[in-house]
Amino acid sequence: MKKEAISHKYIHYKESDFLTDTAFLEWVYEPTAANEAFWQEVISTLPQQKATIHNARLYLTSVTFADHTPSDEAAAASWEKHLLRIQNLSTSITPATKVHFLSRRRLLRVAAAIAGVVLLTGAWYLLKNDHRPQMISTRFGEMRTLTLPDGSRVNLNANSKITYRPHWEKGTDREVWLEGEALFTVNHLNKDTNQVKAGEKFLVHTKDLTVTVLGTVFDVRQRRHTTEVVLESGKIRLSFTNGNNQDILMNPGQLVSYSDVDKKPVTAVTAPEKYTAWKNQRLILQDPKVHDIVLYLEDNFGKKIIMEDATLNNRTVNGPILITSLDDALFVLSTVLNTTIVKQDSSTIILRSRVAQ
Image (tube, rainbow, N blue to C red; front, side):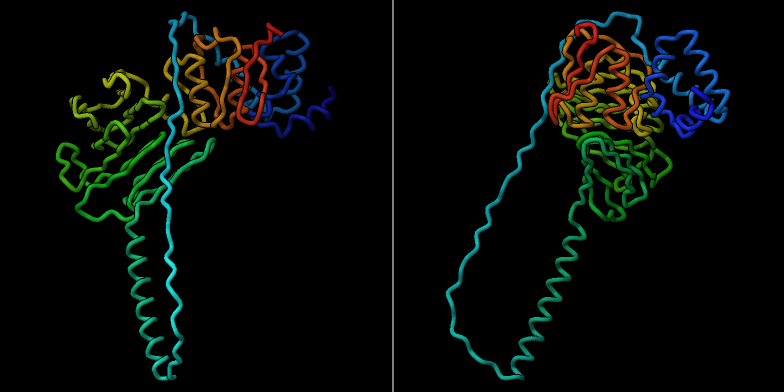
């Protein structure tokens, strides 16, 4: 390829563009002398793209299978179904009444009275709505950042919902209810975390537990019958809804996982940045099997992903997975697994082994 053609094709490429370029993939995964010479010419022609090319190549080479053989776990999970109650509203029909004509003066009085009622009703409605819980949700594949009434910041992951009162009065606990996953950065009313008083607490409620915030940054993930809490900085306390488990006081670098099946919390040490990497559109799970990655993608993008060769589900993958989009994540996963992506329909995706074709 001539230098003019190289400049025309690659000068505006981003990392994601290189990751889907056939010639680039052949250079990374099937290097030959000709491939090496060509890409060295690209770098020589476009030195401004050298760092982008290096990062894209480093990314692909960092995603590999782990050396150890994973255990033979069978994991089965089903989507939780939420039932919505439909309330039937009945309207009553009042019988027709005889029409009476009013004098102009009386009509004005009635109009003034009605206007007063309308104003009072409107004021009551506004006050009522002012205290109505506010619900923020994200669709599949969508992330949102929001600021709570006290200035605390929440990064809300895909397919998640957070509910809270729009105004937090002084002297009352700040409470939010979470379904899904969120990263919280909390403002403290009392800098002394050992002397947090009533009315100064920040509480995060999930189906199975309540997080009392004494620290600053933590991630809560509530998916498929399991709640996971990872503390990045500060200190938090976990209280369990069932009342049978003792409170857990967490320190930075700790992970607590609670399943509503076995009803027992499990504590481990982890790298918090792996659990919060989704905020930067990267997926870094703790020693993830392919099965775990597939479940995460299903939860966040709302598609059913089927691994046609079931033995691949127990393989363990090292390295980050891009989650800027489902296509990006599946592309990297299919490249590592040597599979082809088959979109069976609008809601089902099959990863089919290339060897079997």
